Image (cartoon, rainbow, N blue to C red; front, top):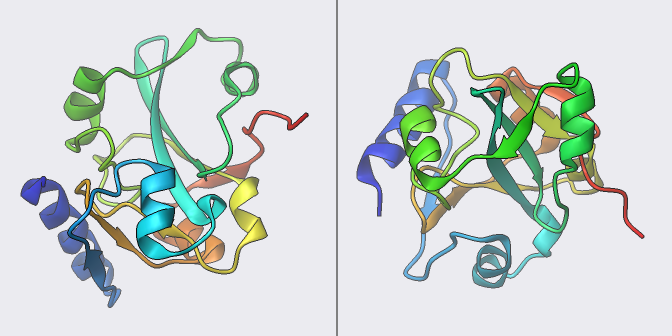
Length: 159
């Protein structure tokens, strides 16, 4: 468990004046399948928070648990800059969270956040809350408001 990460998320909610319960579990929820199984929901309802590096600069994509980020779409959105999935060291250094615990809220200032439209398929979604065994309940519009994110289409086309 990453107590610092959960503290950051709690502090974010408190500072925002948002009453939000963080649900903690005995089992790990560090990936979408485990989280969905633990919660008894569809994998798509898990809001994965993924750190990418665009020419060395961090950016976050929050996407449905049953989708993958299309790096070509991210590259196009970022003006053709080189984009890669961040490694565990990058994740910890830029977000303060461990892999599998990255929350879309409580991130350091200056990291752009993009919420993928794939989450719109669900009224209720479950982002991580700073540890590999916790989550909070949200909705796409609430998550956009909480994060100040840009909503866009960054998921790989199904097919």
